[in-house]
Amino acid sequence: MKYSIILYKYLTKDLFKFFLMTLLFLIIFIFFIDLIELFRRSSNKVGVSHLVKANIIDLVGMASLKIIGNIQKILPFAALIGSIACFNQWRKKNYYVISKSSGVSLWKILSPILVSFFLVGLFSILILNPFATLLNKKYENLQTSFFGKANLQQFSFDTKGFWIKQKSKENYLIINANKIDEKTKSLFNLNIFEYNKNKIFQKKLSAQKGVFTPQKLILYDVQSIDGKSKVLNIRQYSYLINFDSNRLNVATKRPDKIFLHDFPYYLIKMKSYGLNISKHLIHFFRLICQPFLIISMILLSASLMLRSSERKVEVGIVSLSLVLGFSLYFIGDIIFALGFSEKIPPLLAGFGPTLIGLFSGCYLISDIDEIKNIKKKG
Image (cartoon, rainbow, N blue to C red; front, side, top):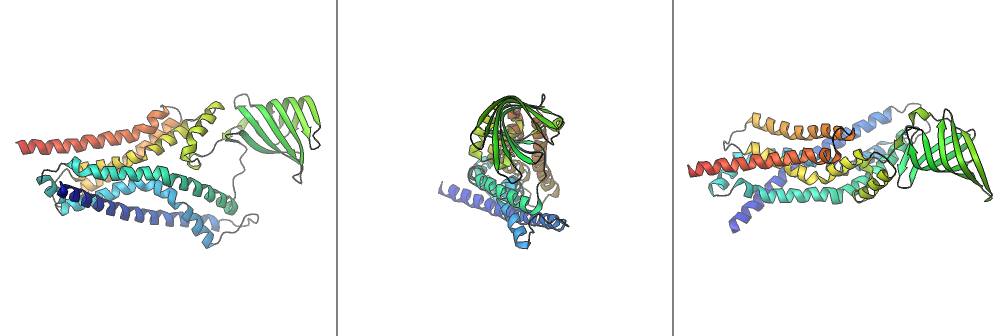
């Protein structure tokens, strides 16, 4: 029993060594790709005077802000490539052959490894995710300062409703609505805050309903409160605005900008406001599947790399392991896209690819152990 524990610890540490080396290489590689892209974007800012000029330290800092988020994304790939390299070394040094001849099954060898990497996945979603979300928001703010932001005419959504900034003649409007109907181009339970060109508050308008017509917003059952708290009830009121009502849409928070613990509340709010939650729900499912995806990669690579006991490196098996692992990830992206477009249920789109990889890996590992047991009995 003591020797088994020592063996399991050694093999787990060996795999972790290859995993960390692969992870470090991928982090450095992606960091320089991000840095080169930021340099390219910075060099293209010719004749733009209203944006802050970014120097090399700013760009390196921006690229560094993406490291935690990139680690989260590449953990399954690092587990795949690292395990392939490690299992190849096991074959060369006969680690697996010696363990097998001592009566230790492949499942027993892999069990402590799988538990350890499952904990790595939990660490990713519970610890790394909040930091990645926080740093991603900081990155977006710096990106807006250095490179600007597209001025899209769309409503943004948060847990307090829908928001948009508009201009009416020389005044500025901040429009808030509790509900929106994109088909009829209507807003419900509106609050409009009006400011002059010097950004001094003028008045607040509350309306039961608002309808977009070409270049105009018409409000119904309006209550107006000016800066002196004077209240005025108006049946109908209109603003001349430069807004294309035919392109009315809603911009929700990007899923990668939402903290994991905030997802349930945000999804409930989106649903209560009548918004499509498929994209955010699938991202949430995909996030909590991260530990299972990591161990799926290890199971798939082990089922191929350790199927044979030959010491020589088989390029075909290594290539097949890589192709199989990457295919699982990219087929998952296709299934996610089908889920986003509501072709398949979000639950199936979110959990399906990971569960396919997990069950396939378990079946192939069990198949290897079964073959070995049959040969022993024979």
